[in-house]
Length: 585
Image (tube, rainbow, N blue to C red):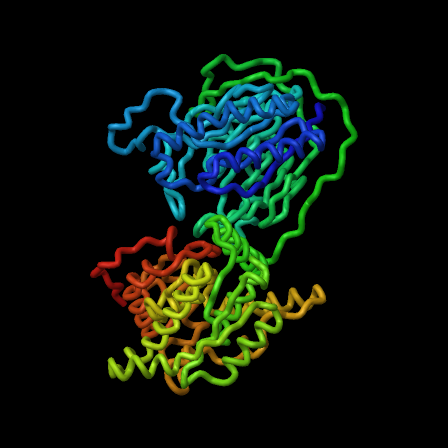
């Protein structure tokens, strides 16, 4: 059987940074060539970054992407890398005229494409067939679908191409099988969500068996606004058995040696259709590559479910800060578990020297809140300053004479003014420290603790905040490091400390019960009757659903944060703020 050395480059592009992303491809090509690879596959939309949202419509952006593809091919050849076959994802426009004045067709007919580069030329192009329109995806809004399957012959092996959603739908793997391809390469921009790596592997194995061909899956890595791409690139053989797998949440060039079936002699006539798809084959090299000694493939260790969430949040925060041109963050440290976990995450993401905590004790702040914040700073090395709000609060009260909830919220808003003032003065990005349970129920002060540029744990329910905190401490201990999170911050009852003796339980149900109802109502979108049918107390369900429905306007004004669940508040879940519908019990 012919041999082929394949390189999959899971890289971290930046949306809109076309020249920087071209350099990522060139760096990967240099490394792949040095490793003796014959074929290099880059991720989906790597030249433009992904997702590009409505940038897809902009003619100047489309043209800039189109210009860089042949320029990249020429640079590869100029550097002596022309014999390496490179498959690169990018933005393009429809090959044939599309009437973009017709309703439902995106302006300027953009396409989500992959080009094959060889010997200084763009030899063929594949346009993504299936455009997802669910969850976080709006691709049917942004792109025109392709209908051609591209097969390129490399070293005597037929290699079919697909892009991301194409293998989640029937068709492309069957077309690859009908074209007798030996390898199906899939370019991906697949965002992380908990345990998705398991379903990806199962899908790739199934599609490989259906196509009777090896399958190589290369994914982006990095954060982009609310999305985190986890890498997790992999290769399975024609039987669906895992051959190689890259790390999660880290850039990596995964190099894999494969024995693959020789290309079939018979070539389909141009325009031949399999499963409704037109198949085009381009022969780049029909002779097998010179025999080489194979090397063992790498199968990276996986993080467990809690570790996945933690490092996804770390990566999302790091990239949001750095890709937006900042270097440091500031957060209010109350000594509670939410801000304590965010502080630990920030240190892991950016380094302790770039994390600035502010303690803002009031007349009702407990001593342990101050000492727990100080202990976090001692353990992690972040900088902690104290700005007491009691005198500021008294000055406001002399003018306003507030009481009840208005008095409580005033304290939170004073703290926010301090954080934003320090942010403006020193250039730090402010982090909001609310969790998903609070966000769901509106248990936050708008323009108070809800201010900030980024909200790292907004997609972690409170019960998971505790679990992830314990996981981070246990991981530190297992590596001979000091656990970053003080035990008292984990074990003490949660409180906003906006009035004497206040506890979260004064306003919210027990978090275990609350999060179970939120999982049913928010994550799985069940109606009230279905939630009750799962065994939840009717009064509890009514209370929680009412809180969730009333808080939509707050969520719309909350900072972005990384998606780690199957359904986050943001791109995943879009509910009207002005909305008279109420679930009946």
